[in-house]
Structure formats: C-alpha cells, structure tokens
Image (cartoon, rainbow, N blue to C red; front, side):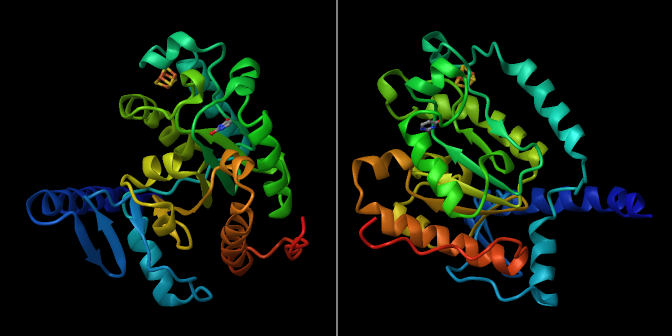
Length: 278
Ligand code: URA
Ligand code: SF4
C-alpha cells in the first residue's frame, strides 16, 4: 500500500520541484512555502528561522512532510548501506575528475557507521589523512574526537567525510572547481547513509552543503536542512587549534545540536559543561 503511495507521489513531487525551480529562475531565488524556505529552487537545501523547534507537533510534522517532498523515503538495513558505500568507494577510488588527484597518496572516502544518525562533514584531507586514507586522523582529528565524545557519541557510531576526497596541496582551501567536481560524491554518501543530523565543520563544508556563501556568524546558531537532514554549522577543529577562543562558541553549537537531539531522540546522558579553565 505504501509503495503505491510513493509511486503516485513521485511525479507530483518532481513537478513541484520543477515548478519551484522555474519560479526561482524567473522571479526570485527565495521562495517561502508552508514554513519552508526554498532557495534558488533547490528545495534540498533550506534554512529555518534561528530557533529551536518545539516538541514534535502536527503542524511541524506537516512542515517536515513538505521538506521531504523531493526525497522518496527508503528504509535500508545497515548491511545494505555498508554494501552501497563499499560499491561506491570501488567506483570512485581511482577518480581523476579534478586536479587534486595528482597530488594524493590516498583518496579519503570517509569512515564510520553506515547508518549513522549523525554525520560530520569536513573540508578535505590533511597530510595525515592523505597518508592513512582515513578522515580526521591528524591533529584536527584529535579535536574532533573530543568534540564527538563531549556530544555523548562514540566515533564509531557517527560517520565522518569531507567535501573533497583528495588532499589540497599545502592544505589550501579546496577551489570552486574541485568542490564542484567532488561534491556529488558527498551527496551520494549522504543519500546512502541518510543521517538525521549533519554537522558542517567550517565554512567550506557549510557553503558546499547549503549551496550559498555566508559568514560563519550567520550560519551558526540555527538549523538548516539538507534533504531530510537537519544541518548544524560550527567551526572547523583546525580553527580551534589555531584559536582557542573559539572553543566556547563551538560549545554553544554543540549545545544547540544536543537540545534538538534530546527533544527528538533523547537517548544520551546530559552533556557536561566543561570547566572554564579547560
Ligand atoms: N581537516 C578536514 O577538513 N578533514 C580531514 O579529514 C582532516 C582535517
Ligand atoms: Fe576526484 Fe574528488 Fe579527488 Fe577530485 S578531489 S580527484 S573529484 S575524488
């Protein structure tokens, strides 16, 4: 019965998407529809008002239903997701789509639980990651490990990936053409994992995932959406290594995530407030 529903819903969803896209092209990139902000006609990337949602209510569920229009929900087992990720890795492991290919030792695909509720998205591999072929295993990784722990999670229950899979020379920012070439890989990973929450680490990840550029001050402190995932933005762990003053702001971002998580899932012990001197 439900598959019948999906079959009839898909063409309508596509037509609505098409309409929104055309509207954005012709009139304005900003469309507000039933509480959802569609930007540039890309209804997979939305931003809500900077407030924490109330406890689930009928009207909020209605809004969520609108947000999920472009996605035909599909429940997959953890094994199926693991298999899809593995097949996808095999498909792209020799990728030569951008100029970062020639400098890499290893393509850093991503790592973690294939059915993670929480996914972290970084910028691109650094030196240590390039050597080991794993994400966030260098100094920034140690900061991320502490952040994951503080959030009440284990590293092996989250998924960690980057916007670009190959190391930019001298750890420079990935360039627009590189992000454009590589971003579909991250999209595919998100489609397989279907994380309920995504933490963007730094502005490069936020800009890529949200599809527009804004200051960190604007991006932080609010909930964004990417397809069916709620997206949170915080500073990159490497920025914390350079500037410890960012620690408390990052802690605020973690608290915002946990507030939403505790309302919606609520299976973690309270987050401890670190000692001010820490
Ligand atoms: N910085 C990132 O953005 N990603 C990594 O994997 C490591 C450092
Ligand atoms: Fe391919 Fe991405 Fe590596 Fe570029 S960065 S070569 S697109 S995997």
